[in-house]
Picture (cartoon, rainbow, N blue to C red):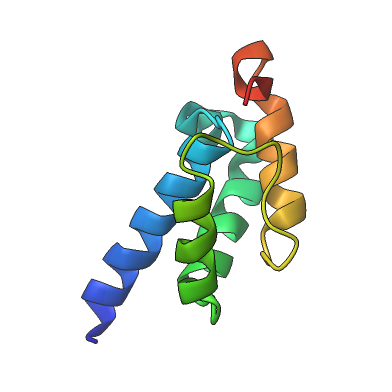
Length: 91
């Protein structure tokens, strides 16, 4: 898989993770969270459990209260989820 296709796939997976966790992508625009968001994207791009992640996303199609324990972004996603206001907490 070439580099660009892999980046596209990983970013699509991250977008799905945001959907499942009800994270508003607009939190990325908050200056206080820019570093957390950037680290989240980098960690996802270099993730080595993409197949397990996609399986989890399929199983949690209706949403989830938290990221899977195996996710290297588990703590970052919790921060982003908590920063999005009341609508980001309804899953």
